[in-house]
Length: 363
Image (cartoon, rainbow, N blue to C red; front, top):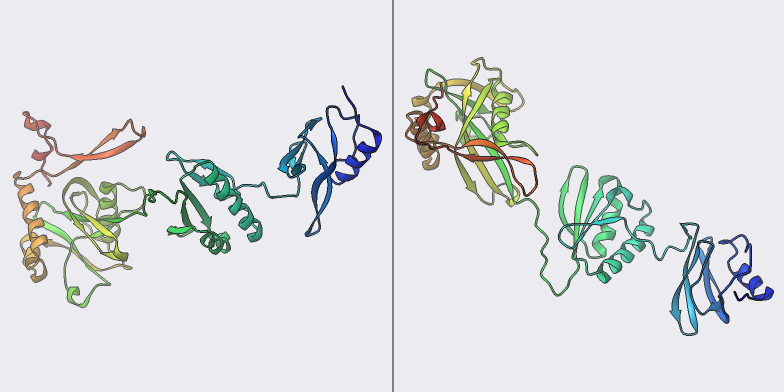
């Protein structure tokens, strides 16, 4: 094994002061040339000194990472016993690959300092571009909202926002159209058609509505919550607004409308429910009044009678009561695509009438 001279070791030791405390034995296999570039941080300033080596070398688990320069190699960073030095040009955001050639940034490990975030974000984008990544998903918690304008300045776009975060995206390939899916395009609502044995329908008057609907008696309605089933959402809404317990029976029909709230599309499911109780206890925050109303009286209301769509819904409900129509019932199934149970809505038509949900009575 070849060794270097004492003077050369002295130069190396002084150069790496602050990173290495001592050299315990002579180097081997290292050739020293007149110039060696090294930088270290003192306070907020970066100071460079120059000596050079001809190749990268590993000594006792400590690596000197070299980059090509005009006269040899330029050291970019020093890793000492698995710890990265204070030179931060090589740091990247923690992220993991998605299933579509992109990356998802770990929002739990974001730098808290805006200046550090700016530098590391730029390095990360360069690294992802070099690796041929596609889309980048960056979730910024509300506690780090000061990072949002930094990301936008670097080219990120708003995707969606929730109570505790904003989601930003970045599409890397300039020559390809962006293939990232857009934000949720629909809101989902339910209406509960609850009919008792006296052919009375459960109806409500809302506290907050347009002046033209002030005296209108309508079905209990509401929006489905996140991760909530259509059938359980319908039962919940009826319970919250009227206090009446119900069993879900079928989806009778659904309406699809566009450019509703916040220019989103709207899916509204009319659900037939069976009452399990009859006592009414209204939600005073939303509901002005609730009652059991004869079906014939309900459909004779001017607003209902003059609405072609709602008139058709009532006709469908009446056809279902006389077994001339069959709605959709939920069936829990597991798909091999994700291995999770989900609800498939369909009606069962069989040669044996007892197997069909179309023969079920509602009261």
